[in-house]
Image (cartoon, rainbow, N blue to C red; front, side, top):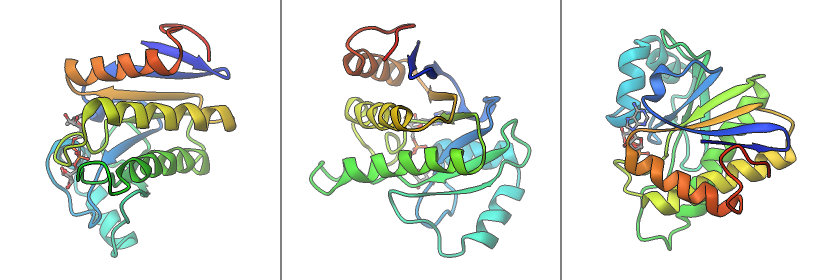
Length: 187
Ligand code: APR
């Protein structure tokens, strides 16, 4: 499923983000940048030890929740990994939506700063951090749409959803946010 936003493409794919052939992929990291399971485990496993060596060297203090930092991508097909720290879901009254939006926004800013034309994003916080998928989809998509309405880059933003349930939640949220003009519509 895809839609156009001011001439740039916003896509939804189902699959494994580590296989994406884009300039940057986003990791669902923790604030210590210590590695873990889920997306984080898959990225470090497939990308090799160079990624963790670089995060340890350049970001010894980790990364605050709601932000992101960049490294090279080791053996992955992408050029960069942006390590984004989403919030742990705590019921929705602890600023989770702002923190989740901030993490996505910072990834898009990093894409611009690093000259990336394409970026792949996972559903941050929706695994180990337990953010409800439908709410996370609305936050993630509305943040990307707002960014693309204000910036000329990146040309392609792709959400890579791991399973059919996540894909369905993002597809429903995208239709809701774009007034049902998707797929292939224009915002
Ligand atoms: N590609 C795309 N999506 C994936 C992949 C993958 N290879 N593996 C898991 N996912 C999906 C999950 O199904 C979930 O919907 O990514 C979403 C985010 O899940 P997590 O990776 O658990 O990330 P998060 O909820 O942000 O929790 C972060 O988990 O692995 C640790 O170190 C990480 O402490 C941090 C925490």
